[in-house]
Length: 410
Image (tube, rainbow, N blue to C red; front, side, top):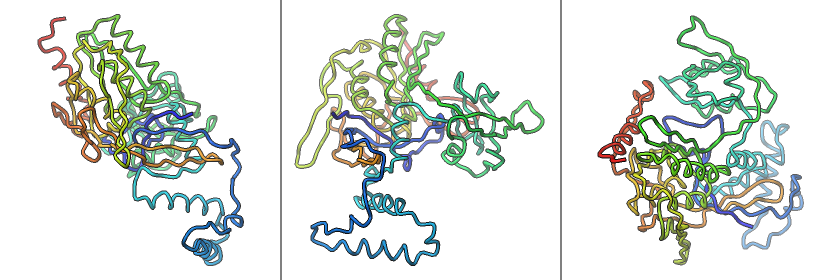
C-alpha cells in the first residue's frame, strides 16, 4: 500500500521565525510511502557478506579497500563502528545523486521523521524563535511540561543545562532542549519583570501538537492556521470547515506561513474546499509522463472571500494549495515569495528500519507553473521585518484583515 505525502528537509529550511514546537523539520514535496519488506530492527547486512561480487561493470573491491584502510589507519580507529561506516556510505550513495531531497535516513532518523509527520515527539512543548538575537519562547503549549513548569511567552532562554545559548541557532537549541520522556532539562530564563535569571526545571514528556488552529475573531474574520500537513490535519481542517459554515464569517484567512509541507492527498483535499473541479496539481515524470490530481468536487468554502498568507518558509504542500487557489482565482495571496519546492519524492521503508527518499518527479500548478527554486509570488507583497518580529507586529496578517474587511457586505 502506498500513500502520497510530502516531507521536509531540515538542511534547507529558510525561516526568520522558526515555529518548530521543539520538533525536527525537513523539506520536500509529494511522496509515496511503501511498507518495509520485513519489520526487523536488526541490521540486515554483514560487512563480510557484502564483499561478494555485485555483478557490476566496475570493481567493488575499491569500496572495501577504503573500508579496510579507514579501519586500519584512522587515528581513532578504536572508536570506529561498522554500523556508522556502513550507514555513512549509504548517505554518500544517496548524496551522489546531487539532489538535496534524495537522502538516506538511518533507523533513528527515519523514526524521527515518522514522529514529525504524526505530530508527536518527546520534549517540553514550547514554540520558540529568535528575537533580538536571543532564543525566545514564542508560546508554551497549553497543558504541556513547559507551561506546567512556569515558562511564559516572551521568556529569553539564556542557557540550557548551564550551557549558554549565545550564538546558538534555533535548531541547535531545540536539539539540546528535546530529549526522552521522563528526563530533566533546566532552562535559565531572563524574564522582563524579574531582576535576575531564573532556573526552571522541566521534566520532558510526550508532546502532541495539533497541526490546525482556528480562530473566529471579534471582527468576524476566521483565521485557519495550518503548521504542517500531518496525520491529524485533514480531520482538523474538516472541523474548521464545519465551523466556517456554522459561524458564517466575513471571510477566511488561511495562514500557511512557515508550513514546510506534509501529505499530498491532504493538500489536494484542502485545495478542494475552494476548488470545485479541475486539476489541483500535476506531476511530471521522466519520458513525458504526467499525472493530474483532480479536485474532489466538495468546494464548501468556495463562496467565502479568502486570503492565503505565505512566506519563505511555505513549501511543498503549502505551495500546492496556494498555487491552486491562485490559479483558480479563489484567493488573494499575501506575504512574501514562497520557498520553491517543486519536486516529488518516493519514500521507501527499508528492512532494518532505515529509509530512502528519492526524487521521482516534478510537480506543477494547475496552470503549468513549475515553481521549483522560484516559489510562488504573492499577489500583495508584504514583508515581515526583524523589527516587526521583535515588536510582535504582524503587517502581513494586518493586510489580510484589511483585504477581507474592505467593502465587506456580510
